Length: 184
Image 1 (cartoon, one colour):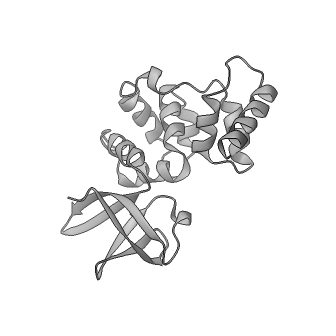
Image 2: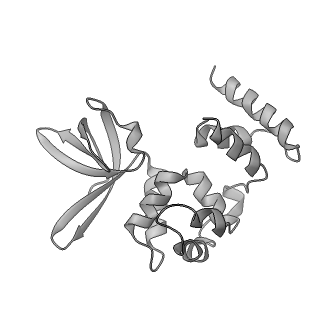
């Protein structure tokens, strides 16, 4: 069992990368394939699956993604592909907030999830403490900023720093200022 591996990206394929480590090349199915470039040195958190005598390595950009992946696949009837699709299309904070807010509609729109969204929400809604994951008071703001190109994690950090009970326009303005201040 691997925890993580660090190596040089030598090939980027349709849904995986080849990671060269000390003259051994590992094929790793990864989330966010667009973040991997040939010759980059990468640290990839690993979940390994042995099925029918074939070892598959699933790779994640950080430990939070890996831990959420493990929670999602722990839900009865939800497999690796469904969990991977969620993580490829939403940030960890988005997934957690949609589970906490029981937003089955948005989760079901993710390719490969559809009818399993309800199972995921029911199976995981008690796994996250609401105080640790603030609910999306500013969900519209989050979605608007994401649509124009801001990173999910950066938006979430900034939203957690602005006052509550603002209108969407004020929240967008303050969030963009907060993002700009953190970039300095």
